[in-house]
Structures are given as C-alpha cells and as structure tokens.
Length: 313
Image 1 (tube, rainbow, N blue to C red):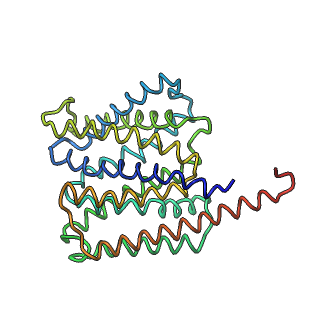
Image 2 (spheres, rainbow, N blue to C red):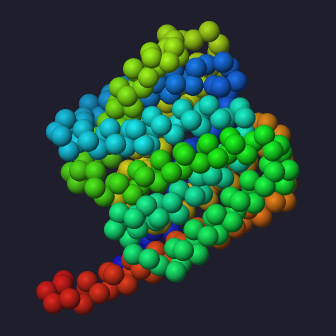
C-alpha cells in the first residue's frame, strides 16, 4: 500500500482540526479581555475538559490508568502541553494580534527536530537545518520593530510567547519516551488535562487568581466552555492521528492553524498585517515544507533498509 497516498485522505481532518484549534486563540483573547484570571481560566477549562472526557471514557471503558509510567506521561504532557504554555498565551493574547500568535506555532515541528537531535532521536539532515534557518528568518522579520509588528512594544511579548512553541515541541520530542504503548488516545487526553488541573490548582490559589465558576461575565464563562470543547476534541484527535499517520505528516496541521489564525483575526478583530508578516509567513511555510519533505524521505529510506534486512517480512 502507498502510505504516502493513503495519508492524503487525512488532509481534510487536519484542515478541520487546524480551523478548530486556531479558534482557541481568539477565545483566549476573549477570556483575557473579559477580565478573567488567566490561570483560573485554564484551570476551569482543563477541569471541564477532563470531566467530559471521563464521561466518554467511562462509556468506552478507556479510563486513565494510574501506573507510574502512565502518571509520568500525563504530568509531563500536561505541564509542557497545557499548564505552562496556555496560561502564557492567554496572558499575551490582549497584547498581540491573533495572527502573530498563531504564526509562532509554525515553529513547533522545526523546534521538535532540533530538540530531537539534542536527545539523539534524530540525525542531522541538511533539509532540517534549512528548515530551521528559514523559520528563524521568518521570525526575525516579524520581530523587526515598525516593520513586521504594528508596534515596537510588541517585540518583548513575541519573545515571551516563543516559550509556548518550545513547550509544544518538547511534548512532541518526549512523546517517544513517555507515552505508554498501550494507552488509547482518549485515555492520554483525559490524563493530560486531569494532570493539568492538578498542577494549576496550587498555582491558581497561590497567585490569587482563584475564582468560582461561573464567573461575573458572560464572555469569560463562554470562553471557558469554548476552550474546554476545543481542547478536549483536538487533543483526543491529535493522539489518535499521530499514531495513524505519524508526526511528520501531522505537522501539516500547523499550516492550517496559521492560515485559520489569520482568518479569525481578520473576521473577529479586523486585523491586517504588513507585507513583511506575509513574507515571514511564506518563509516559515517554506521552512516547514523543506523540513517535512526531508523527514519523509528519511523515513522512507529507513523503512526501505529495514525491509531488505534478512528475515524481514
């Protein structure tokens, strides 16, 4: 079977997930502008997402397991995938255009490759290096004051927001080490958000950002519910699709996030970007395309060698 051709049937699913997940960024902005404490906001939507997935998991008999290996995976993914980056992105949401924030996510697969190389998982590939350099060029173009950004005051916020794609990339890089092979996708997603809720509870209480849901504003309450639905559905789909089509092909998801993020920003906030932002977008897209092509060829070469080994089926 031509795996590459068969994977194409998942493009509509990746596009749909990109549109849905990118909606989280205007939802974060909506929450921040309503005055909802950003850590409390992430705590509550993580709790509601956990409860919803527990209900579905009970019906499907896919409730989380609590062995050391499972708990380690839940808390590692919960911390790096939600508890650290999402409050951060919510905090910077009112300070940056939605399109700029989503553009940062195109760096996730490139940073994943860099981290995987440091961990000894990946080898040096010229396509990987080119991809990283093109991604960096795009980001530098965005960071030039009065050129890529509407205001030079935003440069510091973009640099702070870059912590988020590093966290997301860390989840991808560490997945091979931490994910138990027998853990279904729904179980992993439930454990991830359950651990996020546990991690954020003392932080929320210690920083004075605790509040009882429902909060005082309708916009803040709706943002929590929207975010819970988006995260529960997309995270479950993420764990399922990565297992089927692999992380390299799944990285196409980032194209749809960025394009949809620009769309949400235009529709909801009337955002318009300079030609330099579009050039930066093109550079980062090209970087991801070069990286993905190289990774795909490397995977096929490895599979070809394995199939030629004695005893291979």
